Image (cartoon, rainbow, N blue to C red; front, side, top):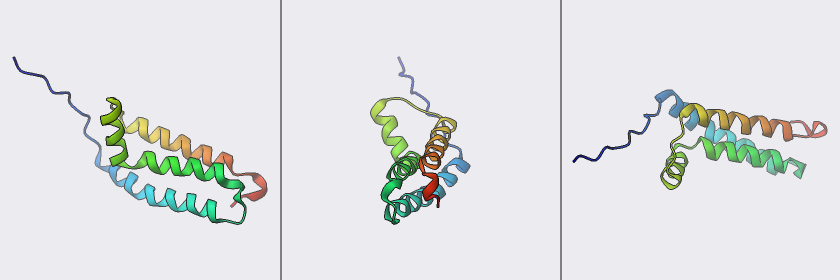
Length: 97
C-alpha cells in the first residue's frame, strides 16, 4: 500500500520575486517610522513590520510546517496588502510622512 503525499502548491515565481523585493522596502519603512521624531507612529511601524514578516517566503514555510496548513499565494498577498493598508491608516494625519 503506497502512502499518498500531500502535494504542496508550487509558488509562482513572480510572487517570490515581488515578496523578496517588498521585504526590504517594508523593513526600511518600519525602521524609518520608528526612528523619526514622532514616536507616535509605532502602531503603523508595527503593521509594516508584520507585512514584511508575512512577505518572507521562509517564514511562510515555517508557519506552514508548524501549523500544518498551506495557504495560497493569493491569500498571503491579501494579508500583506491588508497589513500595509492598516499601516497607512494608523499614521495620524498631523504627522503624515
